[in-house]
Length: 609
Image (cartoon, rainbow, N blue to C red; front, side, top):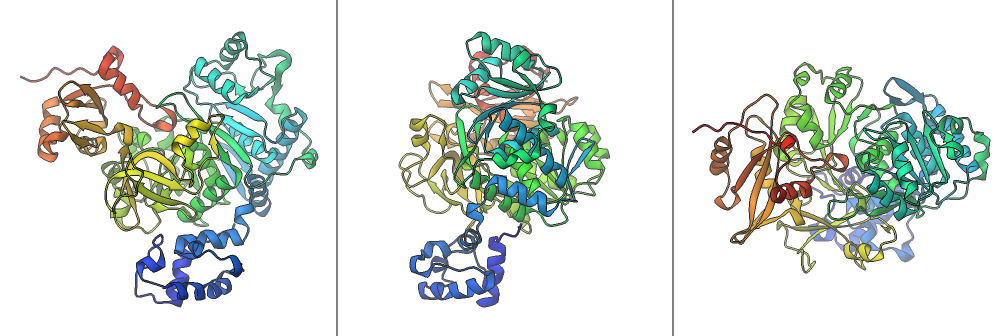
């Protein structure tokens, strides 16, 4: 699909103004001194000719054309992008690429024409079950092709998928279902290590009744059970009964990981998902790219990677395994040009023996998102794979993607920042308490405005705590401007440690720890202390089969970090506790600081005297 990014706008400006000056993508023209207000208005007529659009001059808001990134968003809206729904996106891409390969899942390959036909058949089956626009349907599945079909069919119908984290226990799943009142669930015989049949039985014994269970495999649910295979045999012509979907209609509910309390249901809107998917695709890929995503489909990174890859309008790949060896074997086939990953996975991949025998010749780009990727880890990834790393920042409340680096950015920008906003997104860095904008370069809380969630489902008070009356979403993440436009993420506001009156950002220490030989991964948290306020505790996972000494770590940190950043305690553990999308569970680490590390998680070395 043809959309405009700030890259095309800057090219236009260089042709019309001059190619001898730098044109920032996000800074207003008047502020940067490139154009004055009169020149800005006169430029509108040139924009109309160049991009084939028509501005409403009687209601023109200069903010809509104040920078290249604002122009890109405005031009796309004039071309109808702001009215596009997920149903229309799916239909348009599948119909325009009908004979091309669409998705390879494990060894199965589906063309765009087959994909659309399957989506329509499943949609007809959903309609026949009484699942219509707005119906909430929980999904508890492993990564598999049916997960892709389920997402797309529900987007097509206008139903709202509610993906369930495969790591949650029965009680957590029940809380989610009760919160959103989903009475229909799609599942299979075994999901991860859990038995959905046992989970569903337990939930029903607690008085929560399901209407239907759409199952893959065996029917453990009697008359309530409906086979997914039967949905696949639905009458595609019956999709004529579909209700209209509007751009601002609710699309899905994705629950937060629950690291700061009970998981909250994030309601995302149709057109926001469409825009983020298309912009991400356009900014990261070209017409010859073939993406490969290894993210779990229940996570925000997973379903956004699915849609971003779909929008390349070419064959994209997913696999059911999260085993590092299986992933690296797949990469060695040299069939894929972009790999979508998250940082925690790379701490495992880089320390797999098989990586020394893996061929990365097919890859051109590595997309890293989902959690903080330190400059040290980013450098290791680029050095090992010999291709360009693209860094992204987002959060589910902001529809997953807020900023990203661009193809062609310098190594300095790629490794040390998460880039600049995508079209349609504004950012500012504010004081955590007053919410006033801070001077450029200072560390503060990142606020975003653009494709923000509609709400936390049924929690208006929680929603108002993070979104103000002007539409700014306060992310809880600490950030700073690295240069004029690109930002760096420093950490979470709640993760910041105040030790002896000094602010300590765990990422500063974690980055240094990752530079130490035989350290696989590391995380730093604060523990309450009577005198210091908080003390610093570093958790370190050694590379399997290697030996580490606390003295070795302490000596390295003493040479490279200020004295107030030195950890008070260093703990060796076998693996990090992980939450949604591979993020390290620092809440769990803080509990271990107080309650003690479980014996099975400890790594004990005999220290040298």
